[in-house]
Length: 235
Image 1 (cartoon, helix red, strand yellow):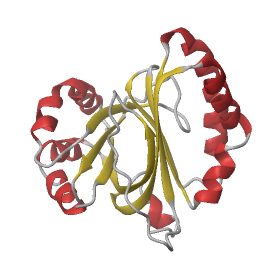
Image 2 (cartoon, one colour; image 1 turned 60 degrees about the vertical axis):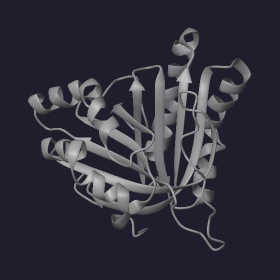
Image 3 (cartoon, one colour; image 1 turned 120 degrees about the vertical axis):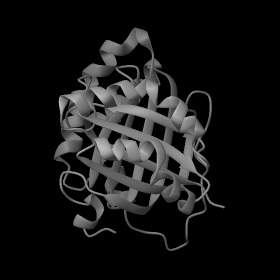
Image 4 (cartoon, helix red, strand yellow; image 1 turned 90 degrees about the vertical axis):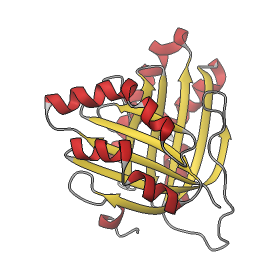
């Protein structure tokens, strides 16, 4: 069996639905634990703007999970707690991923299992970065973020981007999809992003960090009224 990672985004329209989603950050945990076949999982809120910002977006929530294979993922996500989220939301989108590389840890674990890439593998790739920011440097860290968010939002190459997190300001996740490795490298190695990475290394801003890259397996649903990958002719 080959591990599959799912990342689902849900948008909630009414105040009542948003309150429900906010409450489920705590209340959904027992149901997540009981989901057959699920491995590592996280319930996440989101930030406003491009990438992520310290301002939360109370209309968007995400669920990240690992599964033994795509069939199990699709079967379990069609029912149970995932179906409740879909029924309450006005829009949802899920991307299925296969890990190509991973380093670091998330809450002490390395949850993703890298799979061997096909020799001729090409096309879109996804990147996920998770960081636990040290409390003493929160101000300096967040002063860097607006420049990075602005740049990623204006980059014509990025196919999808969203900032999510388990705990506001402290435990942050960035997720983005790029047309190829070259486009992602061009963003990551220049400008505000590269400067921020140097600052992280020089000053030890993160108590824990994880970096993962993925190939895209499939998508379902829509976001902003479209299927992000199909719309870009990258499926």
